[in-house]
Image (tube, rainbow, N blue to C red; front, side):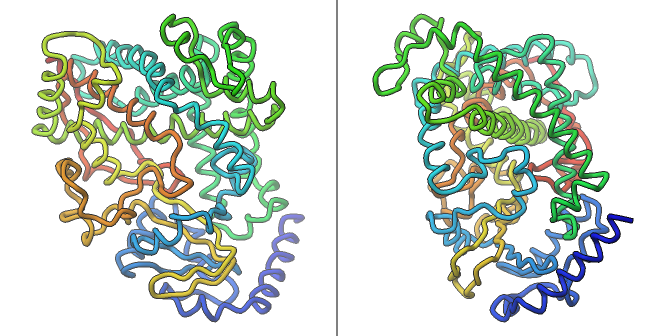
Length: 499
């Protein structure tokens, strides 16, 4: 009864806002017609996450460059043409994250993904040294070990008709981000908890999408009283608990306490690299900043939650699709194997960071995978100043969403855009600089993209040197769901045959 009364109150608020706010400029934009007050909100709330994903693809094919939507009084502009995308994200003028991110703010709070202004600049400054070349070289040793452990796990799959790579890859990326960026190996207790953590992130994303489809749930007081809102808060407690375990473990680790920082707060890289005894993690920089008073414990929690999520889930998504595509393209797979043979010969040695720079064709395969299947399929910015696009002036208080999935598949940018063609990336790009943005672009691009490429090259090259991958799941089998990360309804399978 209480919820029903709240819905009545919200309905009257929507009617009031619809009459109060004029959308003359916005209404000139192309887009599907909506209903008075509700706009397009009623088009979405009965759709499941699969229908919702493909509904956006349908709208994208109907409108060439952009289209508008209204969710109650909220104005949303959908972009997927490179010229307008560049205008939106290339500078610092429109750096404000979109409203939809407020749904995950109870989890990631003011971490690097969601913060703005001076706080974002300060956090970026603290964290940038974590991806210094010397530290990446140090991380390389950890990722080598985890890649070979991944290959060892495949020994149990040699006689199987198919192997679910989805869960194996997510285990690999979660262990890797914990050990590198967090400086913490998952022991028996935290490893078991980690499995629950991975499932919780997926379920949390489902709660967020469910809420996004229902504009009356945008109000915290309503959402928190729903079944989905209560489930969201349960998952939030679980994710926070896992993060605390990781932070506390590193905070009490002798390895962190033995790190030596100079007067400029830089760690002594040479000692840590040569001895192999000290390994600097991103979390160490945060803990050191805490000692200096430039960040507090809550700030550390925000950044760790952000990097744990983005550092394992996005890379896991890209790797799953890479395994599938390489398995389905025998010629490409053999080219990768030949490239590895030129680098390693008959040696079984692990790849060092210099070897990775020689894996040019493998790099092209990864880039083409992320073109077809970008791990983050959309980003959203909120317009606080008028935005002049090529053909339209966008009013303030508009939510601008960039559909990266559709942007990457434009036929005017990529000939035969649905085909897997790694060779596209061997030559100088012919496409617009903002037609391909798997790591976003502009000032808010992904801080960990070099780390992600290194991780993907290491595990893929390690597997292909030992195993031939055969197709099971094919691209035409994939059915996608709407989420912050590109996900499918079913796991991805590959068959592994020892070379």
